[in-house]
Length: 406
Image (cartoon, rainbow, N blue to C red; front, side, top):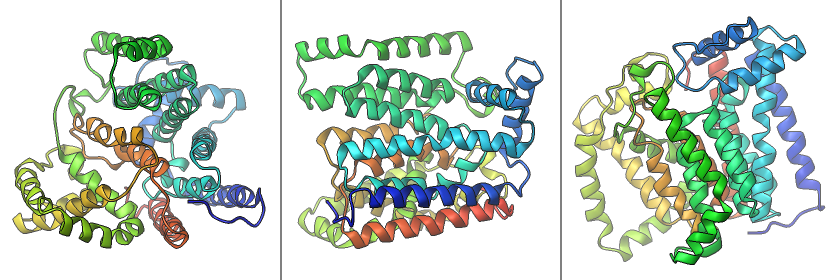
């Protein structure tokens, strides 16, 4: 949906001003706080590199690529303090914002500034711009890979996707997603031998990435580099799938409320919907399990929600209501192109190997949904932006005051 503009560059200038002010305010807010949660381990790894100890810190599950880049830039800039390192990380993380903008502009130029604002203020994303975490940098590389697919630049898509995996190994799922997305954009869902041969010839860089990842897993004897007991490989869990749907409802709440009439119409037109929800509930009750030790650590909002959800059979059933509604809302929310519906199975594929229930694992799926979905009315879109700004700012402030962590 195209919105009338006061001037050609007005929305873009407003976007730059808004996000610049928000970035400065966010950095000043978090700079009053000592290192938080995983920042402690990441800080140890960065300072090990700065002191010439080139080895993996045993409590970090990801590769040390992010830490090496931060340490290299910190060495060049003679930066030592936590806030100096956070500032370097913030600048790197903010690169995800223009990448999202260019991808959104490729799909619809008029709506790109608003969509980018919604991306920046995504409540479960905003706080991590300002912290020493690997997630936003790797997310930006995933988005750059998707941008390469949208612009028919297969080499850019492959290299960016491989770099995303180098920062966080679990992004291998999104490398495969982009590999298939390139094919679907060009050929649709039809399969034929000649199209597949051409696709493999054009996307050879992806094959190198898959082979390199397989070799890494073989030599590393698994996917996680450190903290292996808490991140076992080749396991199957549905906890994150259910919890991501709960968070999906919370993060995009204005859109879901707007979809209520459409959901009711879907249920009326399709008598199979309610029995399908009943079947899903029967599957959910015995398979929604919260057993990871980290999910019992106090002070985390998602751990508090998990604890409430598991108080009794009735709370588990109540917790299913937003999950079921989120699924129905997805069914009535159109995406811009048929190829983009591939995001939904990969949303699941990226989560089922994870034992730890963690909202940061949902960042790529939520960001791609935001990029791919059709826009709604002006009122809903701006309401969604204001909602995200309020929720994201609340999360950032609560984290900075050590009231909780996400």
